[in-house]
Image 1: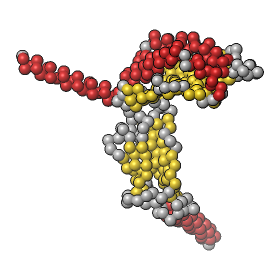
Image 2: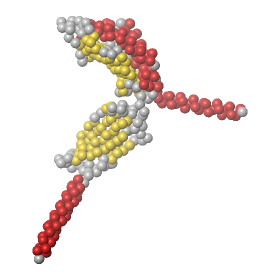
Image 3: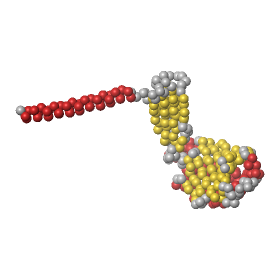
Image 4: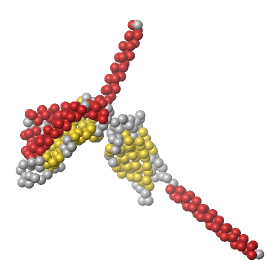
Length: 342
């Protein structure tokens, strides 16, 4: 009995270690949360307010003044936050509509055309590496021009545009400073942690890779290496040759772009000049969901000339056979007619 208890205790100890390691694996990763607010109005009226929140390039929630409704992208995100917290966000944004209109009024108070529409943009970012907050950023803009910003919770506000001077005394107040810290902890960092603990946002997927080659009449050759359907976003693609040496060619990249299913896509290209036969090139791919670095060789030049020659030969042979058949048929009919007359 004693041995069984010891074995049971050892089993649960190992189980606890495995759980801790799995949680550590989820948390020890870089994540970024971006909250964006776009308000449109005049000195007297707020016409529109839109709010978006994006975690790791995935939009997960939005708010629109027209409907006064919070739209959460996935049901499991609602479960992660809880309906009480979602309602809190909605009422908070509704309460802040007057503050956005006041901010627009304050920033344009020296203008003579007070009824002209203006757009106020506020961006609130925070970054996590595991449980450690790396940085934060708050930036105000008006009509597409940056006004003021602050980086870090202990940083100082920077004026980026002369119009921002009229707003600096408000954001430097003790009330706003405490409010900014609360927003960072509860809504920016807090929401991100809740969502990341509930799920990894998207099932981790390895990239599907396609390599192609295109030969041009001028003699130039373009290689393309496309990786798609992967998550998380971080990926590294580069070209190499079978033999060591510097690549001679013009490289370009689309950059990493989102797909409609929240996975990602990237394509790199290499253009080599006439005289290079284009042999021995390969695309190298590194991604966290690949067991090891993957190398995809560029296909050799397809024998298009030979294919055309074969196709042309087949067509000519078919024409020859058909012609012979027609001539033979006519000859046979002619002979049959002659025989009948005889």
